[in-house]
Image 1 (cartoon, rainbow, N blue to C red):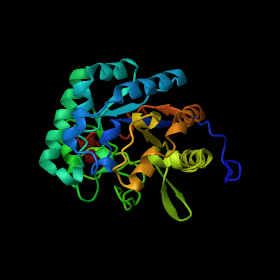
Image 2: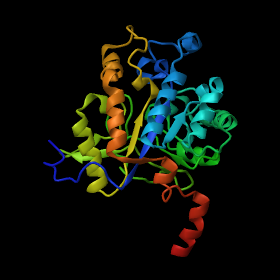
Image 3: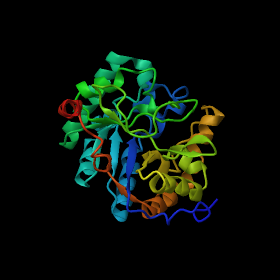
Image 4: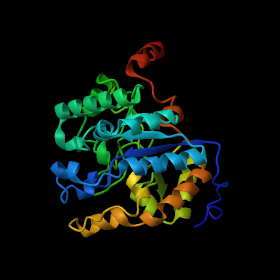
Length: 304
């Protein structure tokens, strides 16, 4: 189905969407967790610096500024890369430190992880870090404490919940738009979905962007912009523009399919997406929604 058949305007829209990058290396993905032990990370070929540099070049050429959700693990090893991200005008945000599932490590380990990551990122980048995205979207019904802890640790927003059903992540009953899961916690900016065929379908990037026809993905995001009148969030990883990365043959067949399919064409598809839509940083696109609980108290008092 084409954009014209859907009755939508041309893909270029005045409404800005949020462009985001989850800065992690090829061996840190959850799909390979059973095949690559964490203790082997330091012995593997790191490609995150070169791949992120390529992303920065593509963004500069397109005149796009986005948000880089960066692992503390990466900032600790490549502080100069973090400085280059900031120098290029992008928003620096946290992806946690060690890419561990929030739902698995528990509240206290989560607090330590996000505190460590924020300290490393701010030390390397020289700017305040306010945004957070959980590894593998691992915040949801099993982590009711997460948003309050994020607020206590100085974060202002989370983009960690994917309102879909998936074998590795997802909170299908979560709201599709910004909301505050905890009254004293940070606001959640969920990953973008589109309603079609009586279902809620992902429309945020990642593997889905590489697997579906580009025209279909573009039409879905344009529907969110035009029919719902709200911005979308797009995400991808630096390893997705690296078709020559090492192959993990010991991983499950499904994991290999998800990870490697479409890598060769990802760069061209990304360049096209950067041209077809208007993009900005999370903190700018969602400035009105990123209000802290302390700022909400006077508004609640006035309303009552």
